[in-house]
Length: 258
Image 1 (cartoon, rainbow, N blue to C red):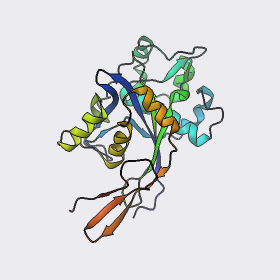
Image 2: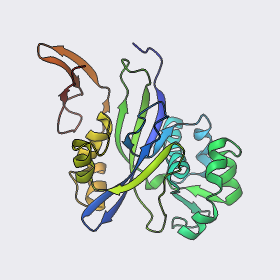
Image 3: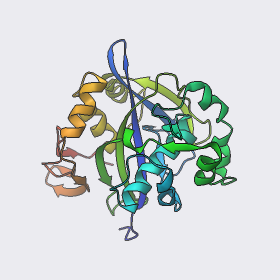
Image 4: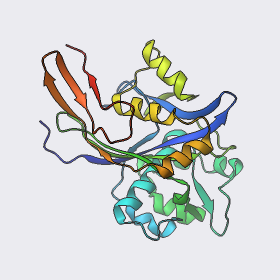
C-alpha cells in the first residue's frame, strides 16, 4: 500500500477533425520511463512547483484557484515540452501564435525541460500569454494506493492549432500519432499498442463523439467526477472498479490472473 499523496499531473487530449472523423494526438512513452513505459498515452506529466506562479501570464483564470491554475499551466507546458504545441497568444492578440512563431520558439522546449529557464521567464521574455481558456476539463483520475506510482491527474480537451506541427520529443516519448479513438482501441486489442486502463476508458469516452465540436460540447455538458479506482476480490477473480456514475461505459473489469 502506497500511503504517499499522489503527485499532481495534467494531460491534454489534443483534437482535430481528420478525413475519417475525430482524431487525437498521442505519444508512445519511452521504455525507460518509470510510469506507463512503452504505453500509448496523451502528452502530459507532473505539475511543476512553479506552475501556479504563472497566473499573471494566463488568459481565462480570473476565477481559478492556485490548484486549478497549476493544473492548466502544467498541461500547456508539458504539451509544449513533449510534443511542441503551444497554446499561447502574443500579448495583446486574440489568436493563438502561428506555426511560424512556434517554430522560432522550439529551442525553448529543451531549455524549459532542463530547468535552464523558468516557464514564467520564457513567457515574459517572449511576451506570451497562455490560452488556459482553450482548455476544456474532460476527466479527473487519481491513481489508487495499491500502485507504486500515484498521480492526481486532470485531463483536458483542446483544439489543436492547425499550423502547429505536433511531434514527440524523442526523450520521454519515442513515437507519436494522430489517431481516431476507434483505431487506438483496435490497436490495443490486436497488440499494436499498450494502453493503460485510465487512458483506454477516456479514449472510449472521447470516441462517443464523432467530431471536435461534438466532443467539446459533450465535455462541457459532462459532470466530472473524481475517479479513484479500487479492486474487489470475488469468487471468479479480482475486479478493477470505478464509480458507476463516473460517466464511462463500464464501471468494473476483471483483472488478468497472474
